[in-house]
Image 1 (cartoon, rainbow, N blue to C red):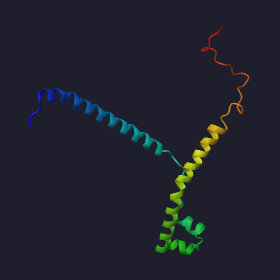
Image 2: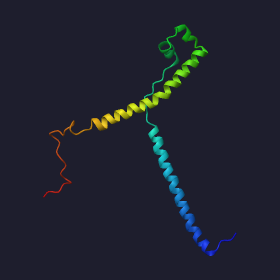
Image 3: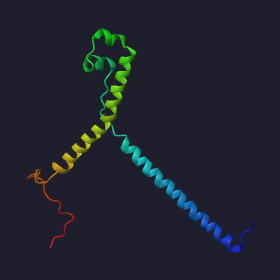
Image 4: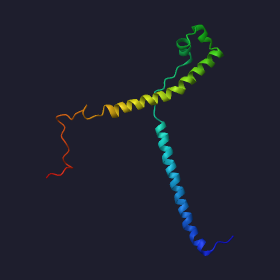
Length: 129
């Protein structure tokens, strides 16, 4: 298949436009992915419970049985841990959101934190009449 002269002349700019669009889309996707991964890397203080602590404190089993680590106890512990972990991270995220709201919105009011007597307004950007 042969292209006409007009099609050949248009081919270069069309391909350059497609290349620019593709590079722009890839760059935008990279920025979005890096922002999402940065947002997900927040450190939450997730507490884990070990088998021995769970066995004696949560399941309230005798020490002798906990020392044996029976397979059915292990399975029950794993199910307990999975259930707790499913709710722990959303709970910690909610607590952080509430803390940020409390800090930023409720306690960042200038009425609650009036300027001190030693602070003076910045007059350098204001014009004098």
